[in-house]
Image (cartoon, rainbow, N blue to C red; front, top):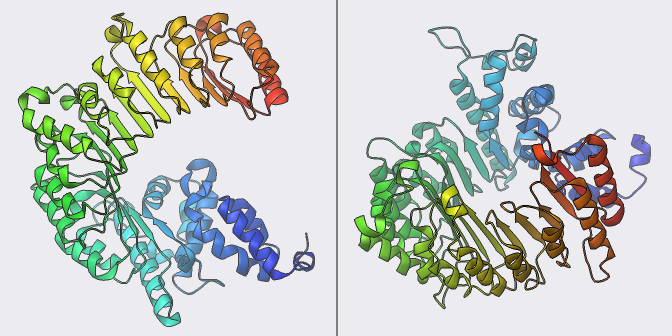
Length: 530
């Protein structure tokens, strides 16, 4: 399409096209629009750079390295005022972590890409360590961060506009630099940090003074000398009741002081993910009892803490957590990843008339059968995952399966079921005949044959199915049953099957099944080969 043809429609139409492409996160489509003409570039490029962090190029490695270089160079050079458009002022999310990863690759590059990245006007960015002459990636990242944020602030001040940058992510941002970076970022809402140790009280005060919209914090890990007290100080020095979402993903040493400080945000805190919790954290987890506005909670221990008998060793804390969760009336999504005594705890929580979950995900090494009767109280449950990671427990037949199946059958609003439980045909029959809304099912612990799939074919709204080991012939009969159901609604059916040695499917048969699914349901087959 020529530039003249591109402007044959009113500019408002092309603006709507650019907006729709941005809503679809279609970076390539926006790039093509921007190449049509300078007028189109003015419409498409702000949308493209606003979602640049969603680009495959910005997140990929070797295959997209040249596109990565072009995208990051345009952002950095624009901060020097040497590009036609102010690209860096349009970005919403500054992901310095991805730049860090790509610079690590460039540091070992021998193909000339490193020279291309640091070619003028970025030759001064090629900072090297004095000790060995290797690229000083941390220093480069800090320089880029200051260049971009300084340009964004200056541009906003000159134009009398709000700063567009809303999220900052970095691997190595020292506290002193982080405090400077947030100055003037008045629209900053989210901070994603690799090391929570840099989050000091001074950084919190800078956020409080300069970032009134701040509400989301994520740390990859959080440990070090007096980290519990230091991190608690950070949380206390934020504006009270402003933090909405808080996540720790990996190794951490947070405990009592951090949990008490989170209660400073008890009215605002909606999403809380605390993973890799160690023993001191379980001793004081009940300190979160004032955080009663939670809508989503995910907990997980370190491997050492995964079998900790905290219902005995710190009974008061265990019982305090039970009472806390029973009082979380807004809680809709709950996830426990190998939390010790998870089903014992939940057996008491789920029967509370104040608790109305929509999503429950449990990965466990133990199973309290009382959990099943509690589960039956959760009539609003739509998404249920239960994974038992103890082979002996999984194989044991102590009426657990029948009781669990009966409890699932009571959750009639269930739309997604994912479990490795070894259900009998009778159990499966009860489940499939009781859940009229079930769309997604993963039952990966049970032998799959005609009788098994006959039960599943009764699910009239099935749209996504995960199976282990169905043979080619069994699969064809199952698809035929789904297609023959006059009341079935299986549009867009997705079938996921890991390859199995004893039921291996040839590429020809795989293609045949994929064609049938596409023709009958407009869906697709995902066959994961060994």
